[in-house]
Amino acid sequence: MLQEQRADGEKVGINYKLVLRSDSFSGKPPPQNQRSLLLDPEENETIFSLLDEGCNTLSTAVAQLLISSNDESEWEKEGTGVACFVRDQVQKSYFIQVICLKTCNVIFCQELYRQFEFKTPHPFLVTFEAEERIVGLNFADMVEASNFRRALHQNLEKKRLRLEMRRSIMMKIQENKMAEDCEKSKPTTVTTKVQNMVIESTNNKKVNDGKIKDLGHAMFCRRKEHFGLE
Image (cartoon, rainbow, N blue to C red; front, side, top):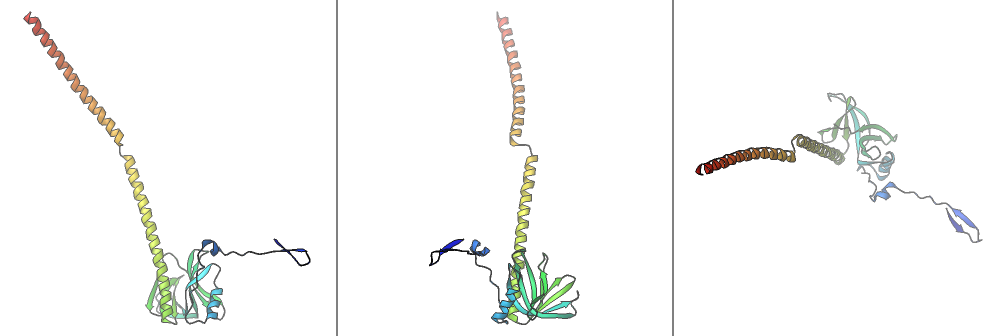
């Protein structure tokens, strides 16, 4: 609390509330929402305000929500709204959401699971598997459809590269561990040297014993000869 002195000399306490954003600590600007080309600024802001806290949309496009059976032979229109490819920084995940502008409600939401894949049977259409059904997004604009597909593809490619890197690191760790285990199972160099020294010492002893016997025999012979000459 700070105090301020009025003109009559009386001091009045003043409360100041300091509001800090998490982005101010990281030094990074807050993530920007990608606007739809077909919506006016007010409509875009309405869509952004309906996103949960900690979420931003990487691509925003006007589209029809279609539902099909597993064979994709027939499609049913579930509604028309604004498709958003949402990054949730709180849950550390990504979602495809369709928001109805009239009711300001989320009419569809699908989290990108590990094996998530999408198809493009038509330049305006993107399809993917949801829970026990096939979902289609029929975009109203070619450019928005292309931007939405690009955002999906870039995200899935990043996930694939991270997964491959993680697998590569795990394989390297396993290889190093196997190499260490094999190295431990082998006799050490010191042990081998000691064994070689023992063998060499034993061989030298045998050789020396033989030399000593030969030398004794030679000395005996010399002495025998010497006695004979006398």
